Image 1 (cartoon, rainbow, N blue to C red):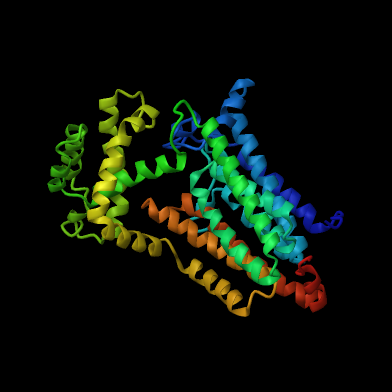
Image 2 (tube, rainbow, N blue to C red):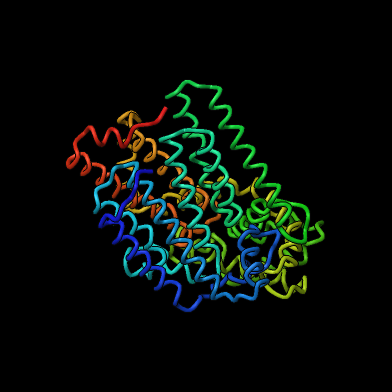
Length: 440
């Protein structure tokens, strides 16, 4: 990296980052509705964030220390990613500062600054801040891998991507960039040996992450965190489509009395899909307003039966696994196409005008022929954005809390393209080509 010096934009960036850190770190910490699920290690949540809190508790620190460290981590990661783009895109000062500000927006009360962006993440005792910081590092090394596709850069990118999923399982969407990158790399270089080395590095990182997850997950030795989360989230979704007549399919199952209670409760409250016309609501809106209630009511009944201390207790979820397995696999055969249709509607509903505009820009980069690194970075960003929406829609809940990671990158890249254009105008095409050249 070239020497930064004491350029004016760096001074402004450091000052702005310090202000964002002070604002985030000095506020009261926020206990969210599902904070209790992240405080203790569990088979049903990734292990890294609970381990982070356990470490702080072990050295005598409170959750206030978590807020300070989270906020500082986000500011540093955002600054590092901005420097990467400043160097690689040869950004003019306004573009560099705007990009950095956009990356810091989630630390601020950003619902009042930018429509639907999740804010104040540094103050929540949840996984958003640590996951976002690691995601920014992952994105940065994805960019470095495009400019210098070395084994070192790609291995760091793969390791950070796996680390992200150990903080929050939703970050599986980052993996969508890997096959796109592999195809681009092969057709550009025609180097099958190097591509094989990159693939081996990625698989090795996946295996290491899975082994570490199994080691640190908690007191239950079997099962996958991501798989278990998928089961407990699909269970209420399948109940949404089901009707009381389906109970006959489970008469001989040991959990039948418990399932009967759940059916009786959710049907009395008119939560299932067949009531949406009676309530004069479209299916997506009706689903989004009912699915959390189905989830909470179903697991509350299971909690009462299992005598768990809390709704989020492992004991509740372990007691639900046999029933969730049986109901999901049995009723998916009957309601599979209904589920797919609703998933498609949720996927489309999660996009807005800004996504359409950005995707149009990314598509233009693809049509251009992927001749420059910014083109392939645009396509990788689009792939991750689409994958994030697909993952969120799969679990049938679309919200700014889940989408702000890729929404931030979409906005960031639009700014970067304008800044790259201005760098051509100011420094000339030769400087821009040098900034955007790939080292072979």
